Image (tube, rainbow, N blue to C red; front, side, top):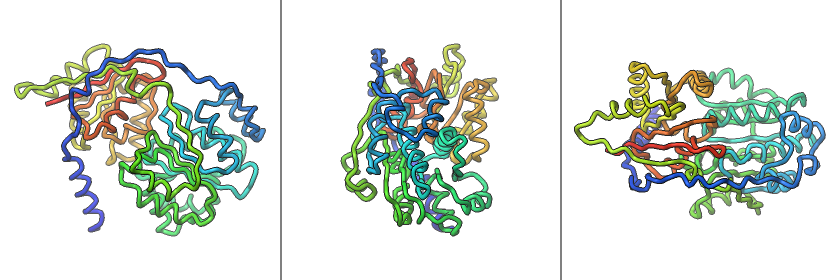
Length: 385
């Protein structure tokens, strides 16, 4: 209990940190340059995949690999470790799932463990895995916080060929001796940079060290800082490096501006005036704390705006339902803490609004990357007191 209270105090301290961002850097017009889309000269047939997997890929409507897939899949099939630098939307999930499934079909002893920083991303990876393994008879599980741990213990004791999990819940299952990682042969660390940001490095170390029969490690990240290189060497051996961008920075397709709020103005009233504009069709509104997010969402609902909220204190069922309603358009505004800045892929978000200055530029970039996707232009506003 003392350990948990200490963690809570540390999180509270982080929430009170002052932003390091210069607000003037948040004013920028979208470049609106036409993105040169990568088109592979190869088809998935050219990658010499197992036929059953090839059929499932084709049934999903995929004919040609994305750039990260073309560059990564052959090396991963050969068993190489990899460091893949790739943003959301570049096909990186398929880049590690396809070679994993191919190896599972080739060798019955192959099992894989994928570690991701957020619950939402874990569910998305698991859904993609299940669609790619349809009809293959592979048993898989997704272990995340906010779900029934006793149910997870029962599931963990089955012969899973594939597991995707958040670090905390996975280590909980290992500590309870419900899960033995000795048989896992492939480790994937997805959104590695985000896991470092969220303080999961010791959890990840513990997981990696528990995999005594690990034969391959795949590390994917949106960014790699030079200061992290020593840390990365702990996990990968003589890795292949693949660096892929989608042709533009995440912010290039986003008009960015700040909204200055004077001491005499009511900040929520200013927000309300903004959100009542007809152009604000689908909005993700970021707040720095869970309490602020809850308060904003309640006030928006009272004002007649269809709003919902997601953050770490909400149950997983609640978060899943909230995202589903937002994706379908039944909810127009999703209020969130940084839990939504990564791992949530929702089409046609017209606006991102930061109710407060984010603490870091990295956080800001990932937030505004929720809009201006698939070649469309988005808008990002940041309130400045």
